[in-house]
Image (tube, rainbow, N blue to C red; front, top):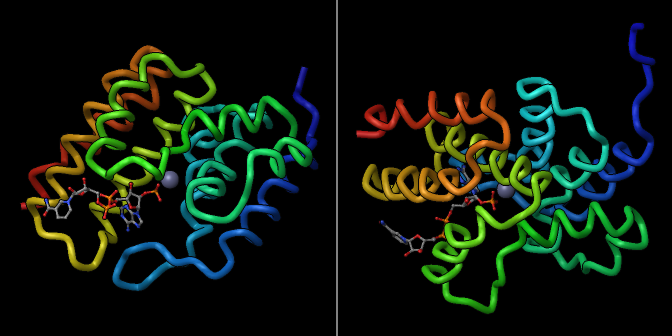
Amino acid sequence: MESANIVSGAFISAVAFASEKHRNQRRKDADASPYINHPIALANVLANEGGVVDATILSAAVLHDTIEDTKTTADELRQLFGAKVTSIVLEVTDDKLLAKEVRKEEQVRHAPHISTEAKLVKLADKICNLRDILASPPADWSAERKQTYFNWAARVVAGLRGVHPGLEAVFDGLLARQSELL
Ligand code: NDP
Ligand code: ZN
């Protein structure tokens, strides 16, 4: 039977909420693209490259940087989007009290232990960031810094493997383009 042609209202609410929270923020590329392009890109990768259409996972994807990068609290997300979406977002949120190097190592250490849903969001995040570094990188990054990011992302994704072979292949295809950074 053909699936019903229905869009999740909760997912649209999450997109609207994220766009409001990130409204004054920009990415780090030379054009300073609107920040919201990135959370939407994660949902696009999951749904249209990964076939992941679960509204809870897609909502967590569009909300994934709200706690880390805006004044959004976990309670706020819980009230609006429920406990499951909130717990996925928390699983992919860095502890900003830690030094940057420590946060990066914590991502590598945590990756194998997070939920399947959080692994999917994290994998999509790394796919989107590698794509951005290849196509529209942070304006002031040297080739070496881009390489360092690729190598670190590969270590994080090593801990997520098995969650979605198709999206892992997409990630590996991007990793294979690392020589383009030189
Ligand atoms: P990051 O290395 O964490 O910056 C990358 C992050 O910025 C991404 O994960 C992404 O995070 C976000 N982002 C925004 N715009 C873009 C874009 N266009 N392309 C890709 N990612 C984008 O940055 P920090 O400045 O926080 O530095 C962290 C580490 O880098 C430190 O550990 C430091 O030691 C190291 N470093 C290395 C240098 C070098 O030359 N090798 C120099 C200086 C620092 P999200 O998806 O969460 O928004
Ligand atoms: Zn992100």
